[in-house]
Image (cartoon, rainbow, N blue to C red; front, top):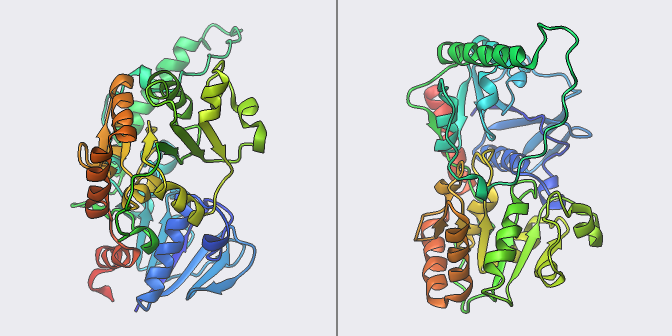
Length: 400
């Protein structure tokens, strides 16, 4: 069996946090993979910003302040190219890409990728497309009417030197970006075929029976509110709630300062000027432990999510689908890979179509039943033990 080292600088956590703290998708994925590899007989050590060295569920957790090993059979750097040199001489080196990979084709990262030549491991086809640089702009998947309004530009200070004009800086920035993309096309490691393994899902969201009765008309949003919650609530207020007056939208996400959420977020993360009955229909919840969140999703009729271009996989959407929750999503980033259009939910690129699909799932019991059962049948994903097996075969191969 192999000596495996994983390094993740994302946050402050160790293996115990999965059961005791709300965590992001990156942290939970690292914990699940580490445990699954340990169960397969490997010696697994994970370096994070944890407080102290511990052993939990067969995995050794170490703070970054500890001395890094000089070598190992497999070294897995999570997301950040800056971590690639943490272990100096591993037999195999992997960059596990859990977010967007666009940062890797910038000047500060290209040389690290070229120097260490890691095997990139992706979780979605969307990531693979982004990793292949293109010398031109990418057209958005949806129009401006499905996105949060952009912030107002800050006033510019007048330049004192004629050569330091804004136009000149923009031209230089574009030239630099073209040079970076050209360098990336030559220097970034590009194994053929790419290693693409969809993230595993925990056993407690997989293989559940169908619900005996449809839930009440409750929709759920369970992501970071900066990811288009404001526009979603606008569509909810104007095009969904008037047609389903008894409907409720439950919002789970980052800390919202308790009962003062609407006052704190109105005009920023939430729209301003909505009447009291609309605000009452949008229920803002504190961050929930994973089991409580799973129960809230299971009791929801539909997940509504406009998404964001940073969605490289969208674990919460995958978990909701595995729990049997149909979803209406915008065709943005990796979201279309999580939902089968017309079978386990709908892809809708315009506000009217999005609202129509949401209303249908909130009110049509037969439609909800078909999609609920299709989610349980088609969207259970793979278990983390299967992910670990595929990961092992892809990056260790015959070296075991």
